[in-house]
Length: 358
Image (tube, rainbow, N blue to C red; front, side, top):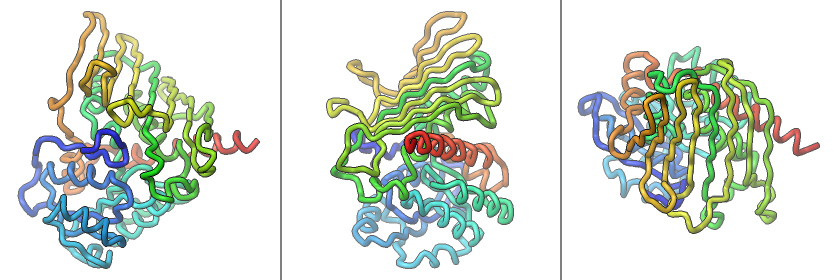
């Protein structure tokens, strides 16, 4: 697992199968982003069987098959879409292509599991909403900063159990390492990646909705800038937004590409949650100078507590997703929640773009 570069961050956990061999088969496709490895790891650990892999780049395909030799490489996506055994397609395409690919997958009668951000335009979201309704299939999103992060996931379960009471405010800081010389060309083309709030901002809005127990939120203000990369005018290396949820909880989040080279991890992601009965800080990936990760610092009416989550919580989302696909349930995440986080990210991006243009 690459710790220094978020683009190749692919967590591995303990195997916790929810299905037997061959009961849930999936394919990987469109390997443009390294998150596809994390998506596949989670599904396999939950008992899914990877049957095929598709990509247009032979070298990328070859590298992928070194990690997953069980996957049969195919040179035509129709091999996957036409196979009745395939129940889900996991993909990490260029962001602007994720929406159209999702429609193709759902049209073939498969569930779709895409890397975030799932869309780059609100029109793509509208098309996906309609297709989900007509097909009855899932269009699920890999919001890894909560779903594939033990402390981030466990914080949501604790809040849901009422340990800090009703949430009043969520503060999210989400720095990432740019690794400019290792990024593909599309990473610097805004029409391809959608803008920083649409892209890595979607993670943060998903967390806010989850922790606040909210179904919607209003964007109060949003800003994006390119502070340090004049050679890449399409890049936004800083973004921030303020929101208010339909529960009354507020949120401020900051996303950026300014992780210093000296940090051992790709980003010191932190979340602070204020509730009516307590407070919580989630240190996801590192505890600067002291080591370790996946820590929750809880203060409630009984005192101060450190909760170590590393190798304790695992990644329940993936097994829940498989069971949801098989049973038509929404335990892992509701479809509306997955779409709403993306919608808010694009609304915030549009507000920031308009402000910057003026």
